[in-house]
Length: 479
Image (tube, rainbow, N blue to C red; front, top):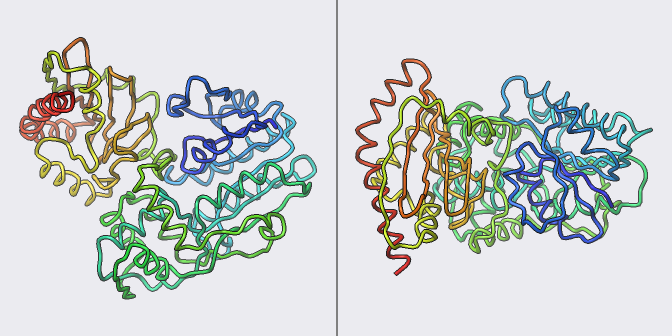
């Protein structure tokens, strides 16, 4: 079966890729904006087309001759015009599929109704309607899920963050709103099963486990984590205040928190029985089982993808042009250190292990202060951590940085995603027995220039000690 997969570097798409690439009877083709983020083995037989749903030629070539096409794209966080972008993207995709002879489109949207849903949910519903608008030419299987529970999902990270940090949680009144959570493993099971479904008609398939309120989700997570927690509803939390609170207490930035908070104000429950009728072999795990499985993946360091892997938000994505802009940097702080006979592999392994629980090797208190200041203005701060304790790949989040380039044993380039008046990068490069650590800054206006000079004394405290510590740790690692 010839299958086109989009949204491949996102939370769901990367995990579905991991499932489908193992299917011997599936010939897989990917449409991706930046192929460097895929991290596929050299032996992979997957076809890759670089482009987007706004690139007519790339989209046409990618869809041509496919049997089934997955649409796992969304524009959450893309700005005020996200709804218009989603409409245009869905229309382009539908028409390309029809022209390319695709027989079935599989789409994952959200539970809820247009009448009560948030702006983002209404846009997701509209996307499903657009993809389904030509049933005479194209069958559409439109799955609708509520709160997705899995290691690295935004909902899971919010719930885990609140429960872990707050013995008593004060929440808005809409904490009583019902939803139907579903584990990521079950979402993937439905998406995979859509390939072999015998039905020929289009269908909307609502999926979920038992109905629960958000309060139930918090208390249920506490039980799984072995913690005693209390939830108190108060009338004081506006959506904006709630979003700031989630931004401060969990890894998600303000924009994503705001979209999720708006979605929590209306019910997102299953409205049809098509999941049981069309896919009777799938019985969704309970919320407690899904939450425990997510914790186990984290414990075993087996997190395949995270909510911030790829969205349309600047705070999450990596654009190839970021590599070019570094040449325009106005301010550069460069430090070099010879590591002598220490193996290059040990030095590079130390470089790629920084951040997250390991910290930044020098003046961690200052790093934490900078992260807290970033959270106060709606940035990601340090709480995003890292996906894997040792491994990095292009597109990974690393606290308030993003991995923009990674050349094994040679170069690690990080793009700053904290709130700064300009663009900033941190680069580690190895040539011979010399490690070079370089901070680049491209200021935006006078404020950017003042920011650099205000931070320069802290750079002097941090960067010199950091490169020295990298070499020292690498030496101990190799001894």
